[in-house]
Length: 330
Image (cartoon, rainbow, N blue to C red; front, side, top):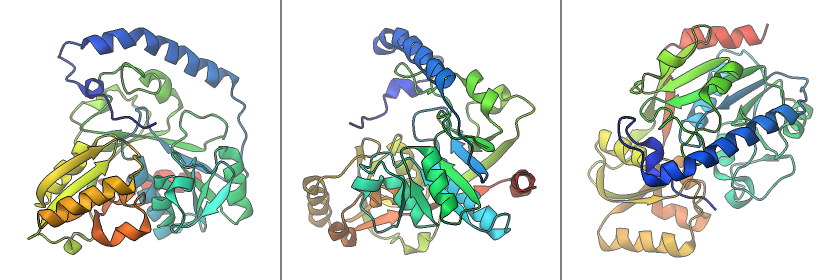
């Protein structure tokens, strides 16, 4: 069951660790040992086509999905490959077998992120990454862009990106459950080919990245913002790892927020919750707005009452990342 990201995971590094963090620190050691054991036992299979992995070190909220969509757009725009496919585990969905999905599928079966990917290109979901890559290959893919899976060694990756949010960084620097790290930064950087930092590097992440690993800077901007009514008050809601980021983005774009509701990451909205939001908006003469990813989890019958705020990732050094991608195709 999804839970909200603990606030102490991203506390100020100069502040005193709360009691709950200190209690959980020994459990982080057990988690770390378990992760290392899984890596040592992993059997890696290689697909007949290149695999690009876009993952992270922290648990959720770094910006993987807009990053992988932006990479896909670059590949298509510059014709680096002819048939790129997305591959996702389908987190939050019930489907486990390899399957090509469409944007009209049910998020309860596929997960929300795959539906967002499917709105841009061919998308495969598969609990077993290698099986999903092979399905993509058999359907005509000449490269696979895998959303997440950096810690999963079952499928060989030709190129691995780590995505880091410049504002939240690596949190308190501790591993799950005492902190947000899925593995140690040192271990992750040994396997990474490149790092993407989204937004200003407020945590000085770049200083800990080895010189041999290229760092690509990017930022998030709204797309098609003209569709948003700037004169209307909005009741905003989001089920993200860091819902406050959505709140801040709306304010930065001069969206009038009447109220804001936070839900856990990948939250499955019940009819009762949506009815309550619709009633609140009606009673207050407001409109409803959420993220594009959250919108994918809204049942069709409610979508006419809700708008979403579309975003896209923009590269600050597009020529450099193009050079890296072109090198992969040689």
